Length: 287
Image (cartoon, rainbow, N blue to C red; front, side):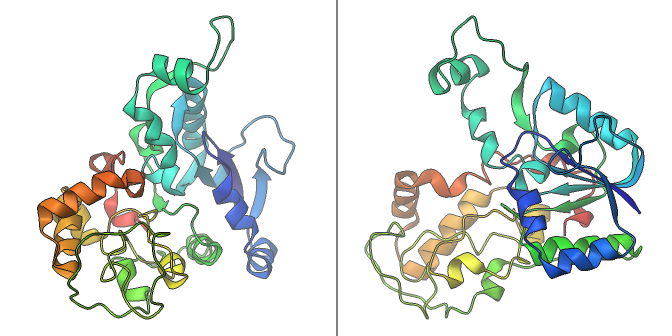
C-alpha cells in the first residue's frame, strides 16, 4: 500500500508521535506500507497518487485548502490524524479574533510583510473534503496510531473507542463536599482519588477514551484532546452544561459557582469550544 503523509497548519506533533511508535512502526513499515510522500522525511516535490493519505493539521491558509483537495483527489483512503485535522484543535484558538487583529496584535506583522493568505477561520479538514477515518488526539498516542493503521492496511475497520476517559483512569470517583475548585498546581493531588472529586477541572467525563488516560493517571487533568465521546456527540451539543453538572455533582459546589470557577480557568476548553462537530460527515468513523 502506497502512503502519503501530509502536514497542514500544525506543530507536526502527530507525525512525531507516529515516528515515536518505535518497533511497532518498524513492523508496519516492513509490511505492505510504503511511504512515498512526506515532506518531513521524504524529498519528493509533487503529491503522488496513493492508496492511503494520512493528514495532520487543519486548514488555515489558502495553500492548506488547495493541498488537502489535491491530497483527497489522489488517494483512495484519507485519514485525519490529530485534533487539528479532526476538530480544529489548539490552532483554532485564533478563531476568537479577526484575521487582521491576529496578524497585527499577536504576530506584530508590519504592512510590508508578505504572509500566506489566511482563511477566515481555522477549519478541520472535513470542512473541505470527505474523510474516511478520524484519529483524534493532541497528539494521538503512538500505539493508537499504529493499531488503527494496521487495521486499515489489512482492510479491517479499526477499533472504535466510544466511552469516556474516566473508564481508563484508575482513580476512584466519590461525591465530595468542597467550597471551590482548584487549578492543577494549587494543591497536591491524591493519587487514588478522581481529580474532579478533589476539585480539579478535569474533562475526562466528556472526552473519548482510547488514549489510556495518561494525563489523569499522572496527576494532570484531562483537557479533552480526543474530542467528545459518542454519547455527547450524538445526543447533546451542550458540552459546557454537561461539564458543569458533572463537577457540581462530584464536588457539591452549586452550578452557578462552578461556572464562575471555570471562567477563572478557561484554558481547558481549547479543544472543545472551537470544534466543528456539526461538520462531521462520517461520525461513525471516529477511532
